[in-house]
Length: 207
Image (cartoon, rainbow, N blue to C red):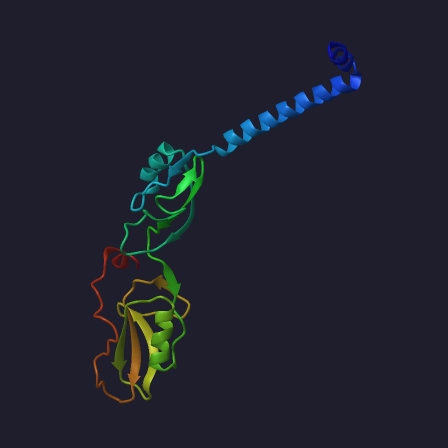
């Protein structure tokens, strides 16, 4: 038996086979260790609840949890303070790997603006629907003397006639002037929505 082993060890083919096997095992072991380190197996962190915070205040929470962040979008909401976080991807409480990038959506600092459509000579219902479709929430219908009944004449903001294509904040209280079909004013106004709210500081400073 000893002679057989001694003869086998002296065989160059067998020696090379053992060396190749040893190298293969070392490579396999090293690869598994690297993958375990790279994927951080079973090492997860929770996405912190930083909604309502500014990105400056939230940065420390991301850092303490080993996460990175990237701002991808901004929206405008009256219900959230300007400049604060309104949405996270992945969601709050999600289990993620350390070092994961969390995508952040912020509430815009100012109201979004939209262009005023050309509503002249439209029916007031078409004009009203078009303004609402653009995102204007506060639209009052005001009848004025005119030859054709229920025909849109102009859009006003605080007494100023707006030109088609002009950009104004979506929160602006607009007045859609409509012809009453008479030489005299028969109706003061027709408000299809709730009464126009008092102007906030943002609307007052817009002009």
